[in-house]
Structure formats: C-alpha cells, structure tokens
Image (tube, rainbow, N blue to C red):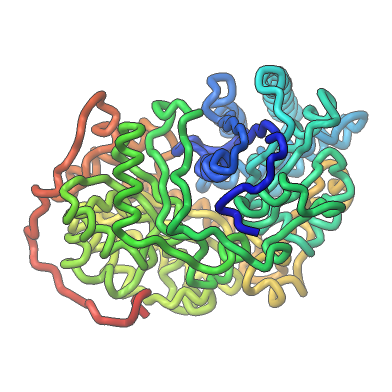
Length: 569
C-alpha cells in the first residue's frame, strides 16, 4: 500500500493524542507532534495535548518529592529526583489498583520508599504521600473528562513512558467509562523497556488491562495509520514486523506539528536528524524501538529548523536523536554556510572527532549549544564491559575541547553497572574532580535492568530477583527485577549518594529547576570565554541571537584527531 496517498474515501475519525504527567516539559511532545503531522497529511482531524504544562499538574512531582525530602536523611538523597521518580511512578500505579486493599497499599508505599532510600518511613509520611497522589488523580480525572467532552474523539492515543504509564492507564480507563465505543491506543518507549513483548511484565500486564484496545510497539506513524485503516483485524498488538519492518522515509517526513501547544511553556523547541542508533550499548533499548538507523542530510535539517523558527519564533532546539555524531560536522558547516544560526542541544558520543579542538570550534560556530554525553563510567574495564568503545583519554579530550569551544557539557553516568568495583567507581569520582571546570552539569542514574530489553539480558536474567514482594504484583502490575551480582543494589545506591555529595563538594551542578539551570549558566560563563548564550537569553521577546562570530581560538589545544570512519572508530 502506498502510504503517501490515502486512497480511501472513508469518513475520518477524530483522534486525540496525549502525553500525560509526569514528564519534564522541556520540549513540546515531539512524538505525538510527529504523529499528528503524519495523520493530518492523510486527512485525519487530530488534536494533541500535553498534560504536563497544565498549571494544576506542573508542580505535582515537585510536591511529592519535597514531602519525601522532609523524611529521607540528606545523606541518602543521591540524585534525588532520578531515584525519587521510581518511588512516585510505582506509588501512582499502586494507587490505581488499591481499592479495598488499604492496608496492603500503605505497606507497599513503605516498601517503595525503603527499597529506594534505605530508610524506614513512618505512618505520617505514607499518609502525606497518599494524599498527594489521590489529589493528583482526582484532578486528572476532572481535567481529562472535560477534554473528552470538548474534543469528542473517536480514537484516543497515549504516548507512554515509564513515568507516564499510571496516568495513561487511568485516562484510558476513564475513556471507556465515558464512552466504551471510543478506541484507546497506547505506544511509546515503555514497550521497549519495562513492558517489552515477551518479558515477564508483559505477560502479567496484558490480561489485566482490558480498557486498552490497541498497542503500537515501535515507530508509530505507519503502524498507527494502518490500524486506523482497519488493517489489523483481531490483533490488539502490532509491531514493525507486522508491516515487514517498513520505516518512515526521513527525507519526506513532515515537520512535527506543534500548533496545539503553548510554546512559551517550554525552554526548547524540538527537532531531530535521525532515528534509532548505530550502536548496541548493553544498558540501552533504543534500537529495539526504532529499528534500523536512518538519518537526514544536513541541508534538509537546516531547512526544517529554519522553517520551525519561521513558524514559531524559537531559536533554541533540543534534538531528539539518540546521537548527533553522524551529522554534527556537516550540520554545523551547513548552518555556517546558510548564514542563519540556530542553537541546538543533543546527545553526542565521545569519539576521536570530538577530541579535535578544530572540530569543536567549528561545531560551536555552527550553533552546537550543549552536548549530552553518555559517558557512564571513567573505568576502562567497565567501559569495555558496557561495549562503549571509548577510552578515558578520549573522554578527557572530548570534555576539554567542547568546553574550550564554550559548548555546554552535560555528562551522564551509570552507577553500579554489573561488575563495577569500588576501584572502578573511584575512577569516575577522580575524573569528575579532574575535569570539574569542563563539566557543565552531571546526571547520574543507578543501573536499571529490563528483562528482555537489553543487549546483555541473558547474562543477567539467570540471577535476577524481585525487588518488591510477589504479592505487590496485583497493585504494581509491573514488577522490578535486579540481577544478583556485584555491586549489590544497596551498594549501588550508596555510591549514588557519594557521587552526588562529591559533585556538590566540587561545585559541579546537577540542575533540576530552571532557577538552578540559570545558576549553572552563570558558572559556565565565568569559566569559559567562549561560553554559549545563557538559556535566559533566549526567553527575551523578539530577540535573535548570533554570537558565533565572537568565538575565538584563544588557546592552542592539542589535537587527537584521526579518520576512523563515519562514527569515529
């Protein structure tokens, strides 16, 4: 079937697509924006809604975390908001299935807190947290019913991640209560991680969720469209294999449609240069979701970003790619050539090309704003176990040269990967201390294990154990496993606490709020003459920024460049 033209004359059903709390509203939801642009091109009427920017929900997770913080000893905070979300999303799921189980529910909330922060919560904390969660769902129910009444959709689709799953299930259940004829559809990243097909969680989850009509697993445009056309009769789970792994042609893809969103609510606008990832890191599931790696040409990307600027007046972009390495140099060159600069933030892999200061200066002059670097560990042994294919020296050179060019460096670390020793962890602490002035911010998370969804799952699943009691399955639906290995989970979280304390002592930020991000910008400006503009600069009405002509090669840094192919290996 030719998906570039809709040959049917069937009446088109109105579609409502949502991203529900909680999800940090840094960008408008690009997943449902892409679906909207694809489907309206086929003649459908589509409305997109982001519940995360609604005023009554914006502070929900912060309120919950602040209640937790009052109880959890500060020495156990670690990267508090990263690990705290595990408690919150499990608590939300338990609330949905706690009817007539109040004692079991209260006990489970205690267990959730205890096994994340390793302290014993009291009754007062449990009651306070329960009230916050109950109030959220009460508000969500009223808000969502109003949207259903206003939009009167025939199909409701939910973009689902781990943290948005409870609210999405709640809204799908309400949809069927309001009108059983409305079709409910779910897709998103959670179905390549905790709810991967074939995983123990999937087998438990599926029969208990009767109010979801269709699951779209993987890249959604072609699958969703074909579902709407009635091409999967009798199948409520479809994957890319059901359409012979047919993927979107990025050279002809429509721009994401952001017109339903108030873009003033987001610090960034979103774009992307590619889908999937050319690598297979042991802890990641990106390729499981998107299939084969594909990328756009640099001229196409520049045209698209300039068009989004014309439409929405936003100059600061967050790129949604898994990695920018294959396009970063041609993209920077194309922006310089165009004479119209956009600033772009995205994920970058450490490689020899980033170890060359000539390259990083070029990228800065082409608008590269912040590099999110999945460094994970500074231990050569753990980097090898992870199959990262990078070295500590390359990490040092990459961070130094990006910072020299003024590009913000956001470093992401995985603490407690199976096999990590105290010596391995110390390598990480030492590197952060050594390079503290070249690190804009740090983000650390404990190692997460997803049965059936990671490259090394067979090695780990032999010894995995349940984190929460078997009896909790009835309320959580999704169980959490952890491999029996070194370091233990408690050791991992102790290292998380030490990691956070170490970074705080060194003055390396871990910003969570916009205010903290503003302070991090001030620090970066003081440290680096070539520093990119502060995020606050982009919030000024009617301003257009181009400081790229001011970027100077003030110091001659050593070059470690070599030609190792497209990806630098």
